[in-house]
Length: 485
Image 1 (cartoon, rainbow, N blue to C red):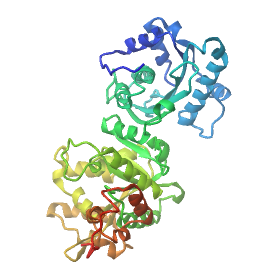
Image 2 (image 1 turned 90 degrees about the vertical axis):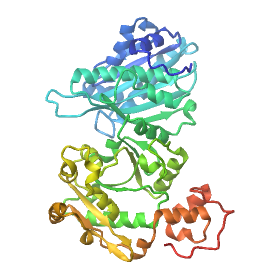
Image 3 (image 1 turned 30 degrees about the vertical axis):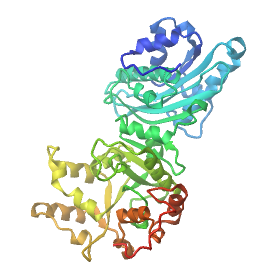
Image 4 (image 1 turned 180 degrees about the horizontal axis):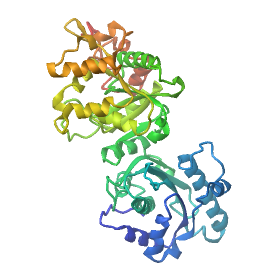
């Protein structure tokens, strides 16, 4: 049933195409945003050929009675959505399999949403998913996604949910062998200023070769989302589910590969962050972040393609160290902090090397902002955030916050941030690490130099050798490393 992506197919035409397909048949359960998805199929015509049932259990007591109480108490959650899919799909099979199972590909569409309230004090978002067959009496498949609703009007948000739902159902049946086209088609008749899709998960025999981490990467690459998050298990996760009401400590890098310096930076930065008086140690999440640009080779041009295998290798390595990984579209730190501040109001820590402190205070990076560096700092430092600076070694001199030199007109601004506990040196670092550079370690790995393993964690060395990552080959050997410098 797979065809090429045609952007000119409108929402009504998609719904009608499904309605006219004699074997697609299913149910709709929508909570929190009206029943706009089902409404498209009713309005398109011939809906009796597609719709077995529509329903909406808005009342919490009714919802719990139908779908059960969940461990996660929020009604707009992935857990609630899965419970809805479980129940609705089971009912289809239970009531209709004998009568029309041999001639139908069943589906259950479910959605649970929170749209704008009357006073517009909340942010619209929700979960939707489809459980479906691709052949009569065949196995089921799942596609689940999380969407942020950006329209500043409740009715417009409901309309966006309706269009997205039609796109999702259509893609499940017509783009299921082409994941990239599947993703791109979700935005048909929509725009990126109306919705953001920040998590999607494919499951089932048809998607056995689909890597959900790559799908999340594409969401960021296509501009459908600002960020994607992967847990220590390597599974893609919805950012708010992981970071909501948490203290976040983030370290940015290329991590190609992860070396001991990175762990020393992170571990000591986290230790100092935990000593902050406002921090609840039980609510801290540590995030290792890569930007889209960092997934490309350093000297590649801006249009260069991302090496997908290299990306997955880096995620695997970070996950093996128990890290939560974020991919983002934020080149500037103030944009990253602004994004995280929408998820949590608790204090955050940013661990970075001395060269990145220099970058933050370089005014040329803010020429596109009307307020220049002051506008960026208003975003970065007005939040509950603190920077922890790891020193660097240059020409035998250790550079840190105390040795930071600035133009005259920025000195008072810097001193203000120091005095107000916004920037702090990482104190207990290993001085021997200052001689080690990531690019030099990568070069040693590619050259097959003996002894490079001492500069990376044991788990990282094992993965690099077992998977032959970053140009490593057991057949290439040099005499040895003379000096890491």
